[in-house]
Image 1 (cartoon, rainbow, N blue to C red):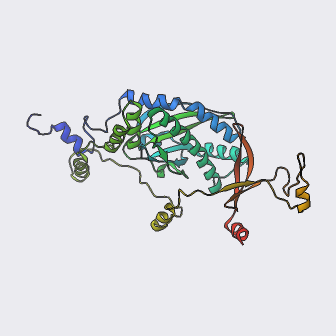
Image 2: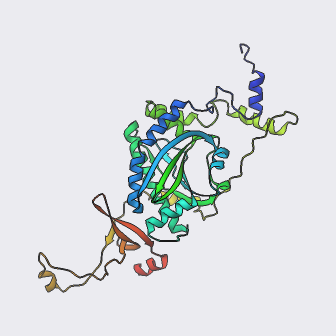
Image 3: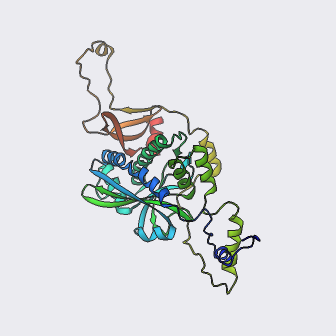
Length: 354
């Protein structure tokens, strides 16, 4: 309006806590969703290949379908108990990024990777799920770096929880969600990937041809509220909930409770953060034996050395020559690797150090 006054429709929208059509929280154009959907579709073949290698079973991911949604709408599509893998972007497009799957899907993946039947989702199994999702996120980051030229994209280490969907820590407001169909062995499953508002805004901007600086600016200004409207929306939300007779519905959301797992004190986290980029030597030991000097000097081509490990017995994984885990040798793309099967207990580690 020419006098700068708000219309009745705009006032009603503010009082009910809903943005007007010109704000940044309106539904994203179909082209934006299609750009992200096409990009993710280009990665599913690599995701399938990686998951097949990790599980030893035929894994095929299809899709995804990308939609703009919110917490309540997504919760309706999820099973009652879900495994949530939080693998936020720490740089490039910093913000919330999660993978969700049914508890049964998580159990099947952990069972195949650990080669263990009737598995329970304990700490060890959840860490295996985290490793699988970390590989998936890494594949996407590599593809996104190649696509956008943004070489600063990185994610944090995955945090994995198995919870009822009502307490799942999902982003607030509107966000983008990608639904994949997953065939694992002979079973069909679904996997959901969630991009928080700031992440999705930055990625969509970059995929649409924007520069890295423009993508970062887009990510900073998209949080569900148009720039400069945050205070007015918050005031409108309070007025809508506190003034009787307004006739506007109250926006009610499920309470999000923090996890009950032990958390390190802020000072401890800050201290350990100082050494997170320090390299340590990791060694995989097939076995050991002792030989006399004359036996060692007598070795030549074709000499067979008998070790103290039985065939099929787990190999030792050492960090700075200290035993921390056991695993089994695998082959990945013609390279040797080790799948961790057991983390050595603190008591065993202390006895080894002694």
